[in-house]
Image (cartoon, rainbow, N blue to C red; front, side, top):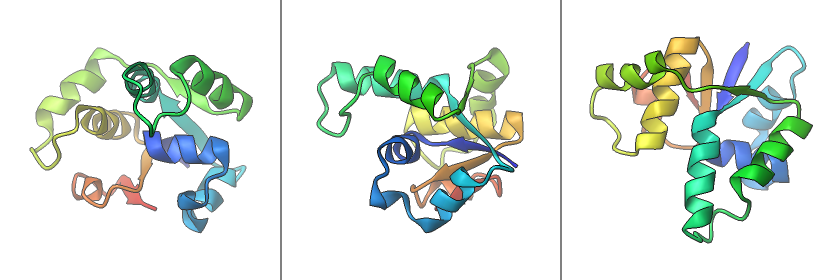
Amino acid sequence: MKILLDTNVALWAIIDDPRLGPRATALISDPGNAVCVSAVNLWEIAIKHALRREKMPVSGTEARRYFDQSGYLILSLGPDHVLGVERLPRIHSDPFDRLLVAQAIEEGCRLLTRDSVLPRYSDLVLAV
């Protein structure tokens, strides 16, 4: 299975945070799964880190290094992903989350998130 991590899940995975939970941990550590992060994750991390948000302890550059070391595939953001946002209903207002949902749908990935609202978009979105 190809899985895409939302930003919180991706950060928790690289720092081994207990908030990740056993289901997400099992899916991420399953060697049969291709674990992906997106340029969207890096963009969100870079913006929030530059704004000095307390919840963003690493820079985008540091996050990319951790993602590379973890063996995660990094998905580029393309026009089809961006335009996919237009087809999404207004369930959620966060632009980063909406881009990740659109990208997961376009790429056929399972999006792992802790956000309880995002699974309303698609059965490809898993709340973990």
